Each structure stands twice: as structure tokens, then as C-alpha cells.
View (cartoon, rainbow, N blue to C red):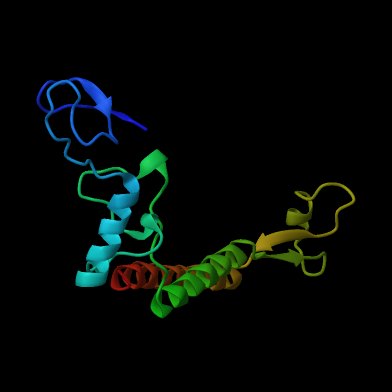
Amino acid sequence: MALIKCAECSREISDKAAACPGCGAPIASIPSVESGLKLEQALLSQWGAPEQPAHASANPMDAPPARGTEIPWGMPRRRPPLSTMGRLGVLLLVVGLLGMGWAMSMDTSVAVGDVGMPSELSRFLPSGMSSMRVNNLGLMHEQRNYLIFGGVIAVIGLVLVLVGRESST
């Protein structure tokens, strides 16, 4: 049993009373929670369920936030999944970066032994060392070509990732 105020005299009276004992004014029944649920069920059965917006889903985090509002407790918004083009872009980006890393690790020097070495060059070698390494221009050009090729593949992959992400939204 809950106490409510009378609309006429503002006395606290029982919600089960038919009239106010002080002034005699009839008590309008205030709908309880159960009667509210019954009313909602009756309306749903008569009129049907209200239409849901296109973005409605069971998970409230899937709905786009209203303009100018923050996502609660600082959680980042879930990104849409990448399209096939975006996945291909990620693959090309990784392959291009790995190719560039491999090119940077290439050894572009070659060993030069005693054979055919002029005696004036052999004096620059440390004692006990009979050969030295020199940079090979052909290998350096090959390394440069692999770096350029890997960079182009990585840039194409990055462009595909960005285009694939925008087209999936």
C-alpha cells in the first residue's frame, strides 16, 4: 500500500481508498506498474510494434551516436569490416613492407681476394687479412630496384585499404 496526495486538499491518503477521508473528493486511480504493462501489451496487440529505425539492432553500441555526443566511457567506435578490396590492400601493404625490409637487408658488397690485387692496395689491409669487401654497383642498383618495387606495392596496398574502408561504410 502506498500513500498518495489528494488532488483537492493535499492530504496523504491510501492509494486503495475510493475517496479522500478529509474532503470526500473521489480518488482518481493512478496506474501502477502492472497496469502500465497491461496497457502497453493491449496497445501492442491492437496497433502492433512501433517501427524500428534502419540502424536499430540488439546491441546499442552498433547504433550510430547522435551528432555531438560522445560514446560512453570513452570506448572507441567499432570500425566497419574491410571489404575484399580492403583485405587485398592489407595483403599488398604487408608484402610491400616485407619486400622493402628484405631489400634493405641485402648484402651489396663482394669479397675481393689476394689474386690480382695490386701490392699498393694490400698495405691497407689489416695484418693477417688476405681479402677485403667492396661495394658492387650492380648489387646496389638491384637493391634500389627492389626498394622501389616494394614501396610501390606498399603504396598501392595503402590506397586499397583506404578506398576499401570508405566504400564499406
